[in-house]
Length: 434
Image (tube, rainbow, N blue to C red):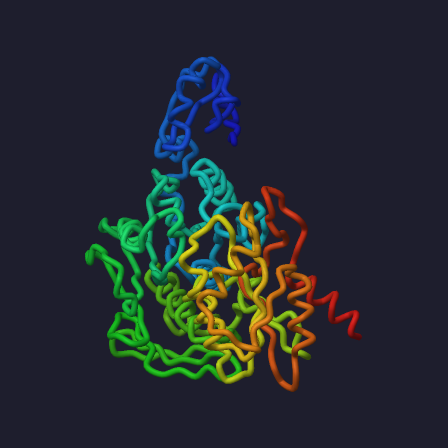
């Protein structure tokens, strides 16, 4: 991409693409485009800068507080909760992550990578600064840490949600994955760590913690999960109450983290922070209720741990679960996902997710390898038909949970993205039923 530079002739823009270069270009070099540096120079570009120099060029450095959130699960919901709380407290805020980029409640960029290339992040930060944002909340993926897609950024606060198995197709081992996450917390930047997550390693300087099971700076003393979430949170010797319409034990962690983060930023008194928590209605595709009669929920959970947290949040219900696994990704998690589904659900429909270049039948077979043979398992590789099957299987007060894709509006097959939205399929099927 390129960012125009107003009133700074002879340079017209900054770019990270050598094809966009000319004599009036500034080329921002990164780990991803370093191999094309000579190509940029051959196009006439003479000015080469780093990401840090680019931040300085646009006057972003020290103008905005960046909050970076990493972890296997919970990044999107926690980031959105922090964003919501800050807005409700009268602050101007930017948010960047899996769902795109938002500034002061307006969407300025559609969905992309969880953490986009650094020049895209710089552009989003520039827009946020121009709109007088004080804070910029962003999701930080493990891929972005390895590939230095956060190069040059100075974080006001770094946050860890949790670490469970994911992306082993990229990182090769859980130990390597943990090491990458841990590297994000190796400096003395203020940080907020989930105390109940024992696998992370971090620099204890400027560190605070949150937790439910273990002693922490921010500790939940009591909670209830019926018809939403209510909790009593202790910070040092004071106790604060908060409530939310969200469901699930995992969302208790997400909200606790969001409250603690905003408090660490020094935005408002804890009572005021807790008072506005209930205004946060959640994120599309995360425990999203598509229908109440019958109860049908769509969620993005696509790891064994993610599925367990989501299904366990409804363990007092009889569940029919529909799920698959993504192709060209960590194969070792597939049987584990099958095992989790069978453990929590009364009926299981195994289907396709985003098969990418793999055959759906092969992915389904690997899921089934982790499951015991049962008459309560159905296989339907066509995802729309699988959802239809789940609705037809439903009896009495059983709920249907469709996992893996959340608010995605496509299905990726053999390099092509076809229009597909679990929620729209559900609505269409329900309208046919009448």
